[in-house]
Image: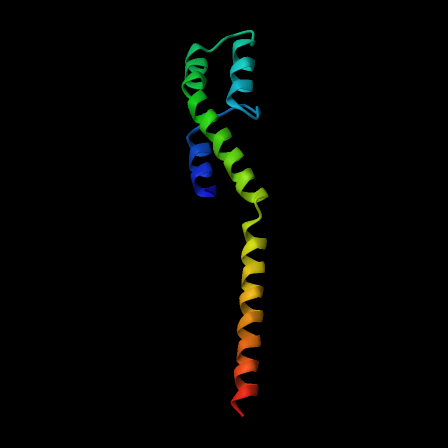
Length: 94
């Protein structure tokens, strides 16, 4: 998902220090000399900005689910059960 976000960010035009396309668009429209080509480029980039925001939100939700912790806990349980079974089999085999 990180690669997809990076690729989308690379397709965005220069935002001149703004964090989002919306901020850059507002700044470009409020400038003393309005560059119509730059404003049109920013307007065309608004769907990409929305997609980036959605992907960032999805990544944040996935990170908050803590899949790494769940995987670690399940692995630890499996290790414990396997070890206990191995000791039990070896103990009762004699």
